[in-house]
Image (cartoon, rainbow, N blue to C red):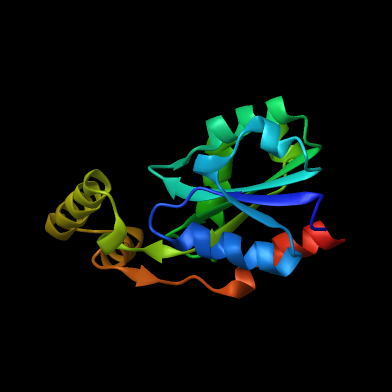
Amino acid sequence: MENKMIVVYKSSTGFTKKYAEWIAEELQCTLADYRTVTAEMLSGYEIVVFGSRAHAGMIDGYKKARELFQKSGAGKIVLFVTGATPNVAEDMVRDFWGQNLTVDELSKIPHFYMQGGLCYEKMCPPDKWMMKAFAFFMKKKKDKNPYEKEFEQAIAASYDISDKKYIAPLVDYLTK
């Protein structure tokens, strides 16, 4: 698989990079940082696996990645996204995909979600301030519903809920 597949990642706090490394290792394929990738580079691959984080409800860097993929002429793109939401929150994950991919993309582009976590220590200042502001407002809010109580706890401090087992559906898809 070495020459037919590449895993491209865009990582801010390390969770996506960790998953990308695990995937590339498992598939024995090329690994590349999003910042160094060109359409010409991607043109040498049949399959481009693009991974990024969920950021403010969006797939960080997906627009540019999609443009690079389309210009490259590579045969297929596969997406994975990492985020702080646990994999078991299937409705939230499904809603996220529906907000980020067109109906056509949802049916044609294989997409996988992998829980990661939060790392305040590695966040850029604007992201850290935004998350700390959410945490402050959630703490002050009265009459929280169960989701809001869980959300308040989840954003209170850094945590890592990533696990190599979450790459299995993507790896299985690509190896069958």
